[in-house]
Length: 236
Image (cartoon, rainbow, N blue to C red):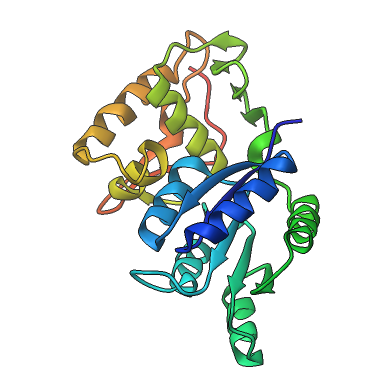
């Protein structure tokens, strides 16, 4: 079974070190950030299975980051455990109301936190195990990095493959070019938005075989961007 990845977001290096050691001994992979900007970039780029999020952070509170994650349907399902010294009931309620899955007050025992992490991951399915996505006769295999249409392997580059994987996981919703750059290329990659148009064009060209034409499933939404339509495409 693949290791689960936990993002630790805390501005105190001693706490991050303690948590990383405990998690790695329990066979988890760890990512670290000490501010909400870096934390958001890691969430978008690395898609951790769970986030340990401190309440008080430089550049904004953990609650601000939590709100941002829960507003976006591509990140809202990532479980979040809040870490904080705040013990007042209204603060606990605020964190849970915004969307935190659990709440641990400092100081805490690493064994207690590990138990909560394990329990939360057991009841929260992640996308790590989804090896194959299918829509009608279009199949995308994440293990092999190949896509096929009607059983015929499609010729496409790695960026087009990542675009197709994203679209097949998020059907019938329009995404702007800026959103696609963040969610497919990564939040810390700085390229022009028109680059998206080039790769969309290449992806459409790849979605056609002598017997099947799926080019129209990637649709242009005027004034917005692109969406993947779940309406069944026709044959050529």
